[in-house]
Length: 295
Image 1: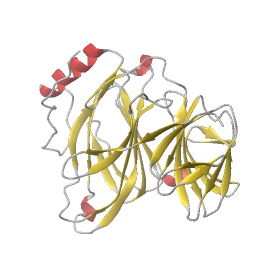
Image 2: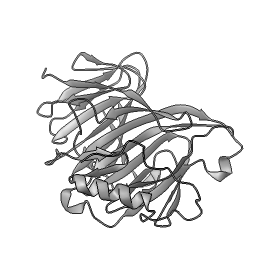
Image 3: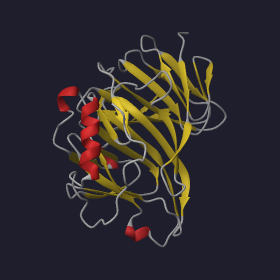
């Protein structure tokens, strides 16, 4: 079997004690396909006392992709979008030349406890689309193709696989699959799913052509051969991400992504001067980090 790169998570505190497991970017690996941030959050119980809300903050040069296994998040942005993010839906926000958004507990759940669990990705935008007009698109769960392949239930969240095409529009070739296997179940991953492919084990270990992939690790796979994915003694969920390799490395600082360092400096200045827009109804915001970007 060809050598595979395994990436382990590091914890990142987003504030208020809300921690995520961050897989990308990693030492020696900035991206897989267009995806250059990979955060796994939860399962975490949100109580009325929890302070897990993410206050308004800006982005440029990227798209955020939010997918929940359980729970709910209320998205609001400077375009006026208001959308409750729920399990199984894909929420794609193109930042482009600049957008501001918040991610909070839905008001209807303010006095209840519930479990939030999901994945948020950042996709680098193609160079020609880095300054695109910002947008937000919600694709409901019932619009996402779901099929049975071998023993697996596969949801095609973004891109195309096994003859099924997701309705989600990405600005660059991308692939994002939700794969669920029962205990002992198997699925053959065909060669050529995408130019670059990574497999993340959400909740249990699996084997791939007999090699063990441990829980909550991201493994960069060879793409020129079919591989047999098999669950162990428990059911398992895996997320497969990929797409065309980025032709130009991205500069990443705070919430900003660009091929140009000077664009990140400009975005920081614009946010500090409150020139990047405002989320209707919001009075708070996250300030710039004290440690500034150095071009």
